[in-house]
Length: 146
Image 1 (cartoon, helix red, strand yellow):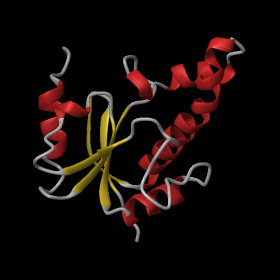
Image 2: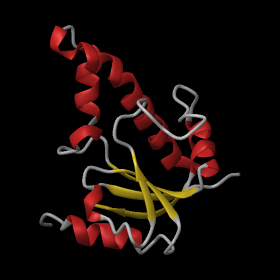
Image 3: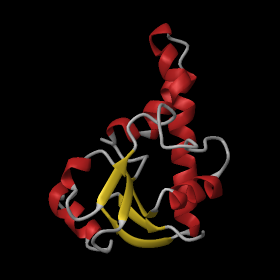
């Protein structure tokens, strides 16, 4: 199977989200999504900034799901964190940064724990939440709960 067009894949993913619903994304190509169809918020630098009371880190997947639901998000889209080409959301990159003793990665070591915690929590949610879409390493979850 050849490489999938990101805009087409984004459109197929969004077709599983009702128009007007809020969508939280952790994807490498968020520009492929239609921001007129859904209100979309994405992660840029985990742990740097988020709406009050702040995204819960190191508190587990239920805390993340509950935070997102309180922010009005019923859907979560994410890319496969172990897939090559994951840009900032590449587990190998952040594992390397976390474990590196090279002084060039000092800030990366600090930031790595936030990226890895978010990835771990999202992967845990993928085991418990309803999967609405999965294609070429891109997954959409419908968040349950409060």
